[in-house]
Length: 626
Image (cartoon, rainbow, N blue to C red; front, side, top):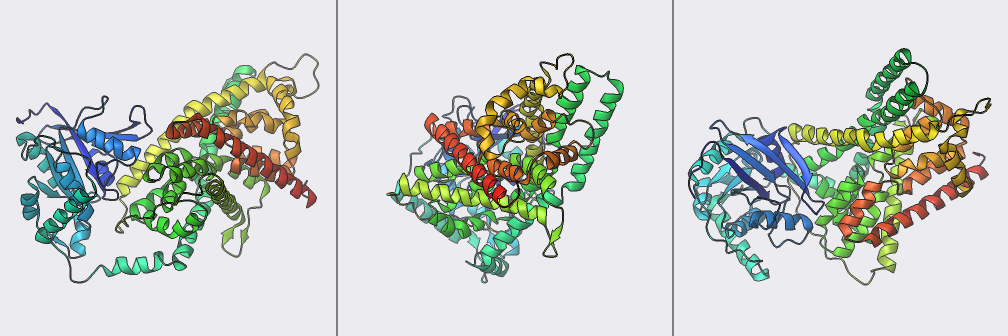
């Protein structure tokens, strides 16, 4: 290949095994200049970013999903293979590959590198996490490694300022000179014998270029002796989850109060400067009250994502999956299902998409079917509203928030129901098939990258705000319209909403929902909740004509006076199971390639919601909470 000019835009693909620090390196190189979308036709995330170097070159960098081989046994790995081989019609083939390897664990990475070498594209190897390798006494002769591989090898520390300077300079030199140019593609899907031969060659290179320490890393060994212990490890895991759920309810409150006060000021200003009538009602009740009533829960969602991202970067997630393998295996779930299910606590959509790490098709399908039962962040506004209104804000056992304990219980019910559904599915649908043994590489413990966590949190918060500005906004406007028209006739004595379309719809549905303790206002709130669960909060505020400052507290106070405790508990039970998220159902259809499984998910969750609410309501009434 010829040298490039400084005005060229070079396409660079980052590829590597899972947990090699590839995404941290991508964030360090591209910073805020990132775009996240999906590849056309599939729900595989496409992350790309731009890097401008001091020499004037511009790199368009694509972060490919992690893989151990180009054999492609999952949708994620298929995308990685097709991008590298230039098979995607919608994707321009990369000009060169940057293969990222964990310096502390080179065996599987080098086998992938040897396989990539057969593709024939120019490439270079980046030894990431060199600081950890040096701390452990691992010595790597990069010159010998480069000589054995036949292309440049450079080191980096993605999480440290200036840790990628040598890599950027090497990319400049590599691009301008096309050192180590590629050749003819000779890659073909390797068989078992070829994989073994590749691993033997990788081990031979490691023996020649890598010197391992005489003593193992005692800190990692000590931590794993506790965190992977069958008893102590589970105690630690549940303690982490307990702290996470307590934090979601308690740490976010000051920020939530500030956001609530801000929207209250906006509502008061609208009432002051707008004449009384439909326009004022539209702005205060529909726009400010509706959207503000959902955005106020953003701090809780950010805290939940923060814990999940922190645990992933720390290297704990894979260990949690190992701990849960025996428990989940007894319920018919593969150990690899733990990470998708834990991701579903934030949102079922990425959780369902991440089931691609499960090789067995039926294990993957089972995980997809139960992922929506995990308590996603969209349920938090509903849970927080009802728990705050009906559960006293007091401390129990001397340290725990009672409201936080109830929240923890709601999450626990979701988890147990998922295990129960997976057990039934395994016993009655495909019990004759055995799942393959659970094998997962444990990444090294490492200090999380603050930059990576902040960028990921910013992306999640932005996605939630976009959702609030589109789907949620549209639904709140729809509810306002239904609650405002037609207007009460002249001389009417009852509340204006009693004459509206919302009341007509609610009264029509009420006979179906009355047996579970729901009134017609709840019936109306459930309809827009089909688009997004959190819309129910704004819908209740609109139906009950709540507006102005401190809308969340106003709704909670009103519900506490108008609902019985039995109705509130039934409402919580409904939301544990109800399939009220159109986006999740669409992703299930897309991931399974079948309308059948989408409707099965919708049907069984709706049935569970109704039965759970029915039992909860009538038991609560029998106990005197009606």
